Image 1 (tube, helix red, strand yellow):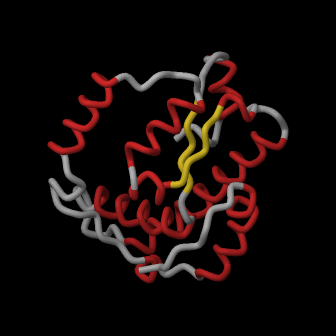
Image 2: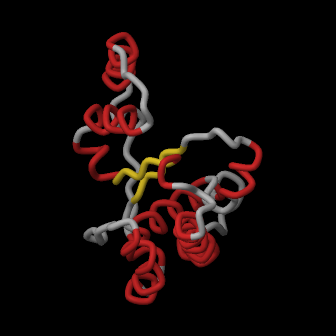
Image 3: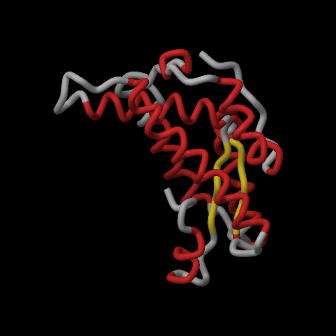
Length: 164
């Protein structure tokens, strides 16, 4: 949520260390559009995934571009941020967490890891159901968005995923 204002964040918290997760931008757009439409349906029968996607796609892609800008212009120095891929975290969360700790110069102690593992076990990904979404429901042009996201995907080596 901070990628739109990294300069302001670091001005307020000059010693901040950040973790930025990366995922196929088209999957992000589809997920966010589905979530926003679901939340809007609480108060309106008029909410739709295509409407939410049309509103949020530009905003999300702008944020991803800003995250590249912040790296290229030095706003966010490489030593202050750890980049990780969402797929790597989902495949092996604790190996990924250990990598984050190592990169930031912290020790992941056994007690902290045990608490994390206990939380993970008590809160499986489908504990409250699954968030299911499909890019096809957004009504957006995948080729156009893929082209707009190319800079971000290239800079952070983010692979394109299969679109549900």
